[in-house]
Image (tube, rainbow, N blue to C red; front, side, top):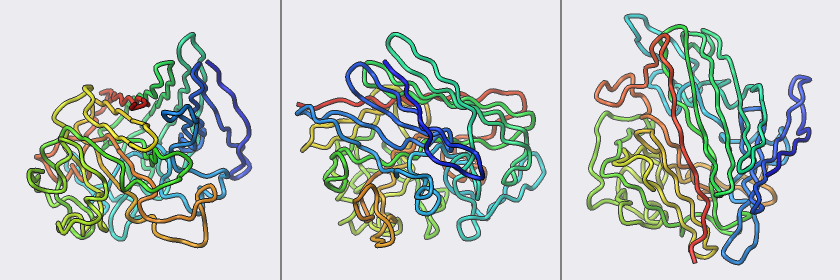
Length: 351
């Protein structure tokens, strides 16, 4: 096991540090103390070739100009909040508007755009990075001084474990996730349309034209949203289902999980043999298939031109806009209570 670090650039005169965790099998994970951004995950295919399997950039300037949350921790609230406001304990809080008239992924300067204090730990069979950030009361409109800790652990089982812990001195909203875009082909050789995905979920959340939950929870049965027995991502692109059309000919939807910590999400790229198994204690996962990356000649992603479906996100979290839908699982963190959550990503090889 090994942890390396190097300078990655500067923002406002402050140096950004890139940390690379390496396990005994050669797997590597590189992340920043800015936004807890995962810039690279290097993993083997079935032939022993190690390649990067996530979308990211090699400079902080590119992240600032072009990144749609590549690899970052999202907070205080993942997803959209309708009209950028909410009522909590009889008081209305106005949030930053950064998605038309709505609030998205924590606002203009969410957890993805701040520096985190970082500690490293090297153990016999694992390496750890512990990130800490104090989100002060009023930041982006949220109440409460919120102390957040996020820990990335890489072990010799080729597992990345992300642990979240939050505590506030006032009742507030909290819904955090990691926004890594995966592409298991390696070094972006192919898009993700032929990736096969399995999700243990019988229900998904309906979205309106603004991608905000309508409040309805729909059955996946007999729809392109049924991933219980596995299906390819391209089914959502070619589907005539109105929900796929709303999302931009793909998926950008929360799925309610029927199980926790039991291989509830499996992503497979048959050609490379790479398989990603995700287990979580969160109630849902948001599947986003990169429908809005779009072809953009102004930038490339490590030499590969940006285009739709170049990566997909599997964001384990609570449901977006839950504060306006009381029948959704609550994302209210009460004063003095401690929020804790764990998501495990196991990188395997299918023979």
